Length: 163
Image 1 (cartoon, rainbow, N blue to C red):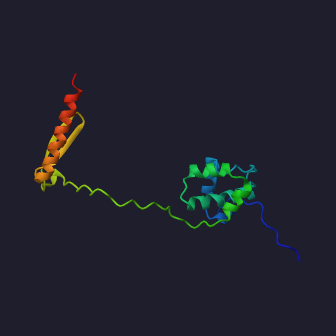
Image 2 (cartoon, rainbow, N blue to C red):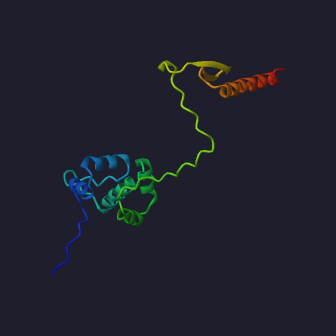
């Protein structure tokens, strides 16, 4: 009894189906440089094992949310044996893990209502060219005092800068 022969060459459609992408995607990856161009033989053009390995590696890296530019760098950086190990690793999408933000030590600023909503009106104070402070007409005394202090600090700063 003979051992089954493993496939080493694929037509475009066969290669695409083996990896789970479209033929168009394979052509696009060749055009982008993620895959080497196969030796052209017209309708008899075939893709080799390296194409299969690279396509599978691309799928794994995409599942890790890498953009194509980063994938291209990885494909150029890794030798074929490492690409083969990568291609056979788990391609299950793994969402990126973001660090949890530290608890706020300062109370968040309340969201201001838009003046055109008819709920709140604001005074616009130009403190310096390009720097404005908007104070709600409904602001409490403490908030207004803080705004006045900011205005005074800027006035002091301007006085110190005068020759």
